[in-house]
Length: 145
Image 1 (spheres, helix red, strand yellow):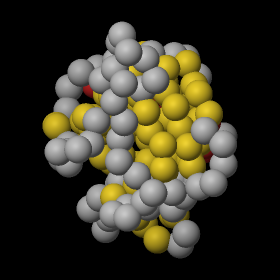
Image 2 (cartoon, rainbow, N blue to C red):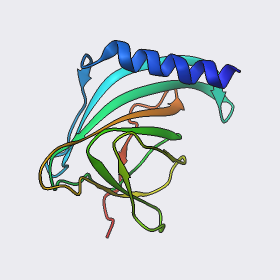
Image 3 (cartoon, rainbow, N blue to C red):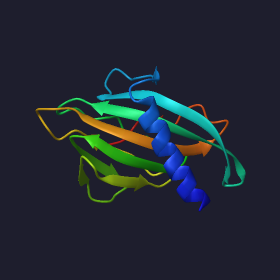
Image 4 (cartoon, rainbow, N blue to C red):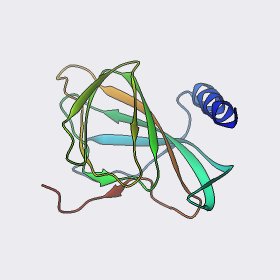
């Protein structure tokens, strides 16, 4: 029941915020534009520590890719617009379409993050759970092949 309430609350926050929020940082070679929509302390603990939920909007231009990275907590993602290619760890790359969702486990290598289209943008809404003292919810992996 508490998890359902949390998921509904996150949905309401995302809908209520629409296009508002602060712009997140970006690496020059990174094809992803990340905008923080909300960052909220939550009552639930994550691995025994106080936790926070951060909601971001990720936009990837046609044919663009994001840099390899890891997340400090689990991620729950909704494809808002376009198509999205995701490759985590050594699993085969998967393609998701607008309206679909996926889950990324804590710490997995997010090696492929790509908009496969040459025509329109890909937009994602992601909720990442992490410890309250975490500054960065996407940690770049410097030497990934």
